[in-house]
Amino acid sequence: MPVPWRTAAAPPPRVRGRLGFARPSPDNAAMAAATGFTFPGTFEVSAMGASGEGLEQLVPDTIEALGLTVHRDSLSTRASRAGNYVSVTIRFDAASREDYQAVYGALRALPEVRWTL
Image: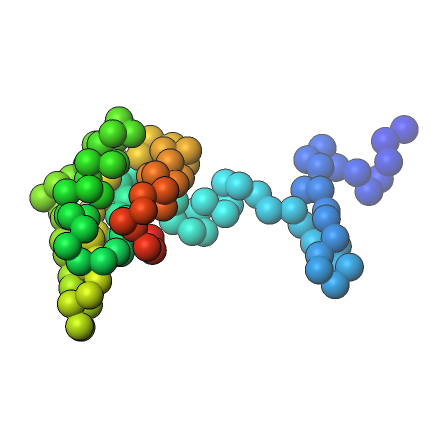
């Protein structure tokens, strides 16, 4: 005899929140939809560092070294008010979240890059 409170579709597992209350565990598909990340896709990355470090060439070359397509026509730069730092923004294609995370990891590993967005 089936249990009346059970349905064919099981509810998502519940985990304990910070205050000890049960809450639904995150659903990766729902999180991706909520944050706007869908793969494959075109994404934008910004890297900041000291001016004169050659970030305008280094950032796209680093992304291409990962085997990803870089949209060089989307490259834009912006200097800080005092001119000590420069921000380089460029678009790239990522087939998966791993590709996307690899770009940020590779840029953060560069000693010339101080911050990424």
